[in-house]
Figure 1: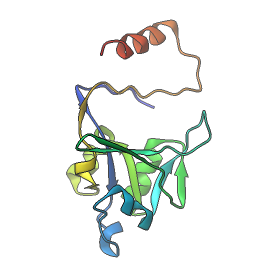
Figure 2 (figure 1 turned 120 degrees about the horizontal axis):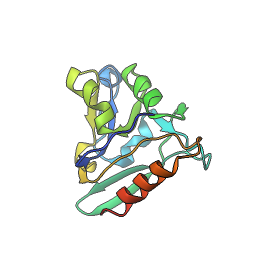
Figure 3 (figure 1 turned 90 degrees about the vertical axis):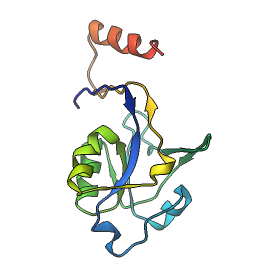
Length: 142
């Protein structure tokens, strides 16, 4: 997986316009139970990632249901673009599809941007000492 970093970042729930042709757009995270959500399987724990939302200082982690679960963000993104459901992905990964109109933001008021860095890397490989040092420096920078 490529490495990405930035000054502001956020994860977003997104779906294709085709997905909403026969469904209503959720207004709250609780309404996700009425939708087919595309899950991310956590390889180290085997569980599914809980979608993280926040509004007016209220944090909410939601375990969503759906027919699809993937081990990677890009597979989730491709499934969302194809109209199979909603996905929760980093905004910088979804941005080109949002700009092209192939995806729409969902629950945007529940997904605020925040300052920070994101670093995407495979956990299956043994990291080099230099890479480990970089990760630790970024963690302690805040």
